[in-house]
Length: 91
Image (tube, rainbow, N blue to C red; front, top):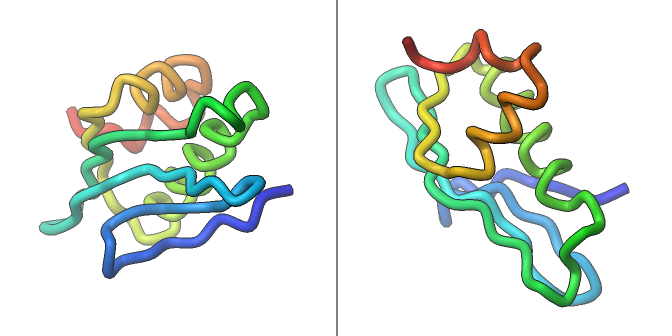
């Protein structure tokens, strides 16, 4: 559906939709990844882009055995709605 990629140089997961950049910003280190902010421009919102970014980012965290810290309200809410990802959260 969306071609999502990790852009470690910019510390974000990203995709484009109709020329609009959609991102999840993060910080990583010490076996954790901290999700800071999710942004999908209004022009392309409501299409499931943020959810696709969240799933991709959390799947990457799982693959790399990283614990997740969520400072992003969208990621926190998304994990609540998808409890199969709750095990990734730091205690």
